Image (cartoon, rainbow, N blue to C red; front, side, top):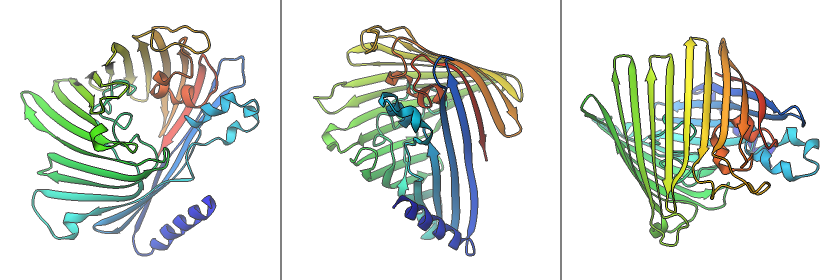
Length: 380
């Protein structure tokens, strides 16, 4: 069935080449990690994205993807995992197939209003103000980790109404989230306005994800402020999430992420999150140094500030330093080659704190305490 789907979708795209403009982009990424005691872990994330501009108002997109990140963790508990781990994948061959339509353009509406509709097998999100600010999405309350229907592979309809190129009203509904079997929806309002020497980006989000009723949804208030002074750039994003469900396990979260950069030579970012019942829960930090244009040093860490909450089920212990990732990279043309070392604390590989630091270390290996890794990535 899956093969038939691939052939059908690809055939539709190839048939449209004669009538429309077809472009191809994507990514190839491979990596391996080893502690020199066990068999090396391996990870990959390969994508081919076909974009077909049907007419001035409609564009179709199909993404073919094969990866073993995240999904390979389940293989660690299987005594025979070493026999088939190279074939693990947590996504179908086609994990995106959707159509974007410029509604206002097609209807001939002119002026400072634009409305774009997305329909199909897609992924939708809010403005996600912490994107690029929160180093590893620890302090990231306005992302799909908390509100955008739980992420996953979704059949969706979404609409973005843009006013004066500055304000956006977003609405999305997922009749079904195939990774969870439950749908959801969200509505959000975001924009930008000049404030002092910088720009303020406010955002308000309400979501009822994973089949939740509206009165059990989440409300998120967030804002980003960006400014620059000469060669120094600065951004800060405070956020607050409140669960309307009075029976929610966690009633509220609060977080702040910040980033400061100097030219293209250095960037320091950090984040903090607390929650109901754990006022100081987790923290993150990352230092990126690029002393030369084609090479750099990347140091990242996640800290466990609540050692009573995150305890290893194996050792019964927890550690303040949950993860430490030190790596260096070099650009060989369009290809990035990264060599690094990943350290994991007592919580080990199984801790959900680790989900966003190093994909090779987290998703591509069943090792419990990290190790040396090599990663090669090229986007096109």
